[in-house]
Length: 177
Image 1 (spheres, rainbow, N blue to C red):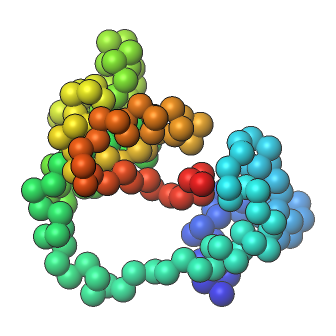
Image 2 (cartoon, one colour):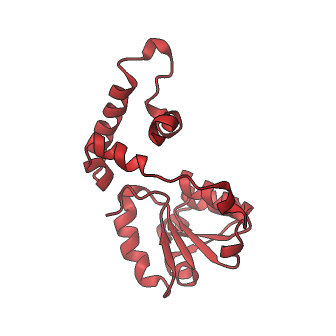
């Protein structure tokens, strides 16, 4: 039910751009989208049947407005370290900082030395940037916002550096098993 009501928001990539380009029903395009995605990478969500995917998405709970009444009060003073500063990492970090959170970016030493785009994104927006060893030990919350294919390697590298009681966070859970 929720998926049917929010299909246009959840799956904008499968909607045809112009009527003349439309080939097949929206259901066929949706199925085709997940079929292509499952061949591109392997994760838990992509192993599910179409019906099971719809069932999982239908169980999502939308938060009530009242749950945001205290703003970020519960996380004031916490240190957030984001790993990865691409499209997800940069924009989530900007939103968190705008909400009053203390945000920094942990990148691989090679990315910092080569001044790769992730380094440029974070530093040009005024964020503190450091290596995993520099920033992860002081983090209360570590957000892994790297591409899915890098998650296993990143987790293996950062988990030993995290302090007791710190939280490892993701933006979605489709690839976590």
